[in-house]
Length: 625
Image (cartoon, rainbow, N blue to C red; front, side, top):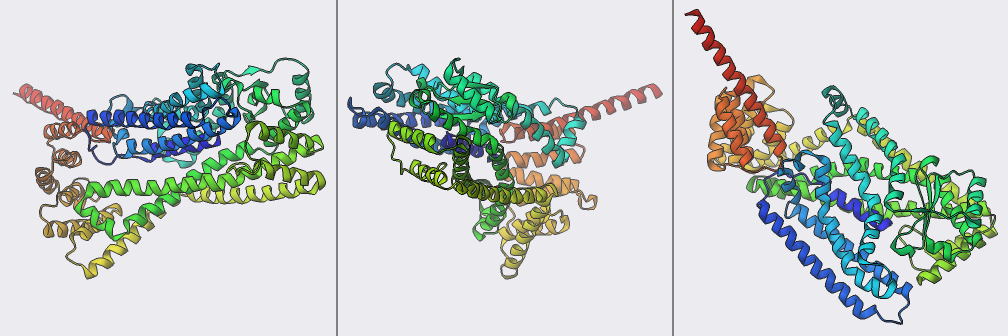
């Protein structure tokens, strides 16, 4: 399950971090064809892999549990390949950019995320459907394909639902009064409070929803349940219910706790675990799960995920401006602005994905392993001995046919766990020693987390952005001292000055760029936009803005250049021309359709007002005559 969490976080990051800056290179039909072809090729590949697996491992005499381990590993490897294919669909075929162009989907975060996730879900479904034949042949002949697929979907619903529900919250903001949405958008603190309240409510409701989706049944009344209930009561831990976690025909050997508060907290135990362990061993497993509750490990995992959001912002900033400081990116911004825009978008994202992998695989793995060990130690303290939990681990290792020394990135190996438990048996101080270690680990993380949070809420991001632009400015200025005829550098420096709202300096750099390269449509466009929209009224030049914009559009009639032409018509009072040009820009099917539609609505509104004003003037003139 930890690996599934890891892969879904990667998928969510791949989709969420991609924001199309230019028009898609492929037409919508071409994109759809590329996606379908990718799915077909992926299906053929995983089908070949699993057919070969069947030929090599599906013998009548093979140990079913050995088979299960190998089969699960193959599914994980194919799932990793599915993430890579999904990344190609988003960044190479620009699947998300095409979703933005669809009328309803482009305006709804929920629909955008729902349809955006579908290719990955389809890739997983192809894996599960091809994995079924060998699973059915060797491991469980009673399970149907439908039930096998539903079990996988139910298991993975826990990762998808919070993301989709959060998307619904974002959509709900659109129907709130403007004063409320404005307060949320303008204040980082208010926004954080709103989302914290939402997450708290979600944490209470989601466990109930998941046990319904997983179709968990109550543990039947009887001596075993009564003993476990009494054991939980004696430990002063409240569970809403004790449920049977019956996925994949009850073959999973696992237990877990779902939920943060007693009224929505559930203790889940798989049927295989009930069959495998005796009463004392079951109590030791439950004691381990109670340890997770006692030490609030689930809450820390949530904090750990939120912490990545804080840290990733700083890292993304560093990668973004570090990338722009490279000479090759300076040159690329001039010679191929579209490729430059894609590079500035994709490369920092790739860096961030690598950081995410390292963060989860190593830092999260380090905390997770020590949390599991802390829960093992708690089970020893609660039951008074390590014997029962050690024997349960021995049985699980034996039945699952895995080596006790096999490493695990989010748990210590079974042998390491047994050795630690035996040390706790011999020396109870091992428990308190490990608890102090975990306390120091958690305290260190919380201190760093809140330090970064304070910087974030103090709008440090704005100052970081300003500092980054200043660094890029100094680099460009220094290079221009030795390369005064370097048009790409002048153009890049003009963009930096514009971002810094140094409009006079930006104007000068754009003019130099145009003088050196008269047909540089991006420089013409940027200078036109500056003359049309500069906050400094003294530098605004509506007529020159229109002349430059029309010249740029004559060279390259791209959507963003046509938008500049429309804006230039608008500030010159030529509202009808602005509307017509705005329509042309939309016909180019730009990625950020919402912006272009808002621009068109603005032009139409002022055109209507202008026509009404003309009618009133004509009417007044007629009456006066």
